[in-house]
Length: 308
Image 1 (cartoon, one colour):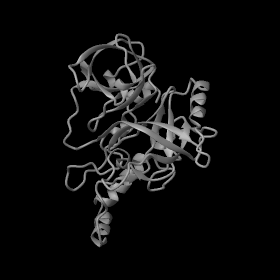
Image 2 (tube, helix red, strand yellow):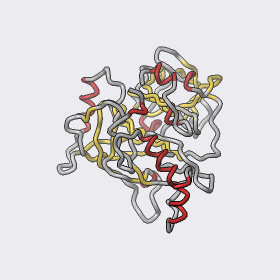
Image 3 (cartoon, one colour):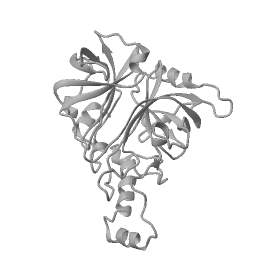
Image 4 (tube, rainbow, N blue to C red):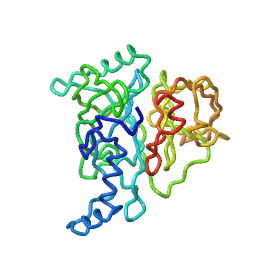
């Protein structure tokens, strides 16, 4: 099954049986006049739709066992008339640390996810599907008059929820509690992709991860556990994701870090000079490329080869 045949996707359009990319392409085509019918509908409308869109259904990858992290599935789709914003509500790279609770009792059920992951070592991807629409900016950049959003309802899935998957027993319709925002960045059309491969280092001192830093259309999303053999980290060092640059290595999916190799990199701490470190990546737990094309593309050879 290719990703163009994904089923069971819930989006803010509420159209099951269409992949997220097809729903969004359809929506932007109607909104911004890619057909004569859409232009006529716009002319007859009292007010144009908002651009950029903010509220939506934000699916996320779930990773980590000592602590649980959520990584939003981003996209580049549609330019606003001002050409300074991408139109889609998915125009953010966004990572948080979270816990899971039963809604009525507020009992912490995060351990159910951790135990399931330990029992299914062959499953690389776990994902989270919100049961409500909201704006990601409510979490990391709330209006001055309000408090940041710190919870939402969701299901936790074994597997990718836009492909064959199963909701974990005990983790259907639970409260997701956000402990902290690890990284949040809004993509802008004028942003340039870095020449060298770049990652975000995050996690806990005993369990580190690299997440590819996404900047512009044509980029890729990747999550993989990693060991840093020549550097010890404290919890305070990892409060926010730390930028890591792999010099001399092109920022392309074919050049991404892979399990079994050692790579020399630079740790770019905000309060000090770049520090040389050695990375030992472990087995890749998520990779996506085609949905970050603009417009979203068919599956790439790298995706086929990676097994995602």
